Amino acid sequence: MGRRGRARSLGQEPAPRPPVTAGRPRERGSGGRPAAPWGVFPLTEIAIAIGVVAVVIGLTRGAENGGPAFIAGVGISLLAVGELVVREHFSGFRSHALLLAFMPVVAVHTAVALLTKDPTATRLAVLPEAILFGGLFVLLRRRFKRRIRA
Image 1 (spheres, one colour):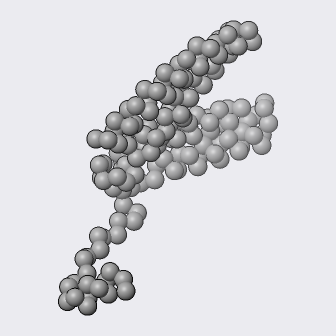
Image 2 (cartoon, rainbow, N blue to C red):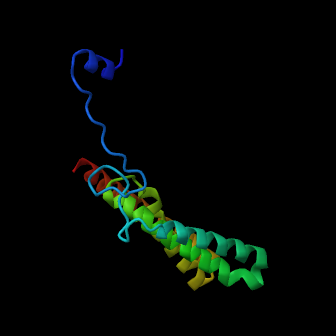
């Protein structure tokens, strides 16, 4: 016999179920996905979709004609995904320490590769980038663990 059956046989009413909140953002601290600052409008998802379409257009046009669309698509997608990852990580919903630590390392490596145009300098930058990645990861992971304990 289930819990409701036992409650009814004992003359008690079953406990009321909490209201269903599907489709609505949850408040901070409730343990659910953090609400976006702009409410329920799916701005992040739309931006990611636009970025993916721009990347596909850039790839289908080739390197000469599709470069700007490809770069714009990657940039838009990076911003949208970055915003979502930061919001989820720092609210304590889900740890994205690896991704958050890797994003600045990719930016530094890209800058070194584009500014020096020297493969040796790019290879030499790997050790400082690994140190940067490790330090950021440890800091971000600690921050997340403190947030979920609070």
